[in-house]
Image 1: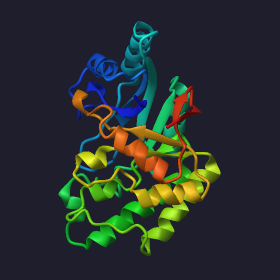
Image 2: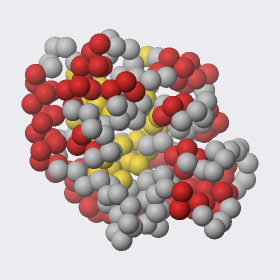
Image 3: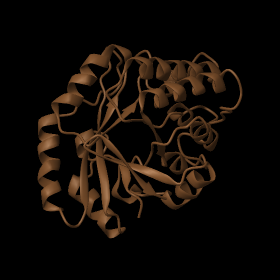
Image 4: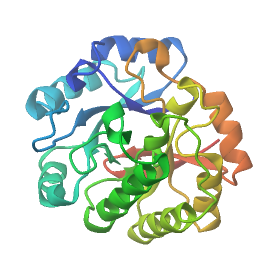
Length: 266
């Protein structure tokens, strides 16, 4: 069973699942390694939900469970860090302060709004809403370095009114290539997030086109994550995703130990 490197627990606030329940489910599925990546997302004056992680409680709890499950399951201590340009130094300090194995850099808030909420798309075209999102992602990867892979690159389309998106068309193809170029230059990877399948999109986030472009451009670091907020979601659509990644030119996927990428055959 492929290693799931995007899992949430009750430490995130938007999940009620204890860490132990997620670990036991992974063991039942035959998984031998995973990474818990709970949210830390901060937004000023947004009116939306902020995920301010209790780092001390979180890290100490995972380290205890890591020892308890040793020999059965490798538990990696991870984080889904909400990226915003003005938080660059803050993210850097957090990444240095705690012994993380892996950090996903995700862009959820764009000018104080999260596309998860319908208000983000109001009073403008879907295309304009999408472009604002990708411009925010570009700004984040340009100035933020405290992450290992960029999470769910086309996250915004999960919540678009029509969920129709053509990344191969301009102006989207150009800005996506800019984002991928910076990731590769900085030695950062890309996450293949299977949650898109759960949303009925028949694709992961990002889509096959973006995955192929990343690989053609020389990108190699690719993690697989279910974005599970419930135990039944762990490892979901991993068989389909492994097949897709092979079709996109990947022969391996990546796990992280102590912030170091380790390549594993698909």
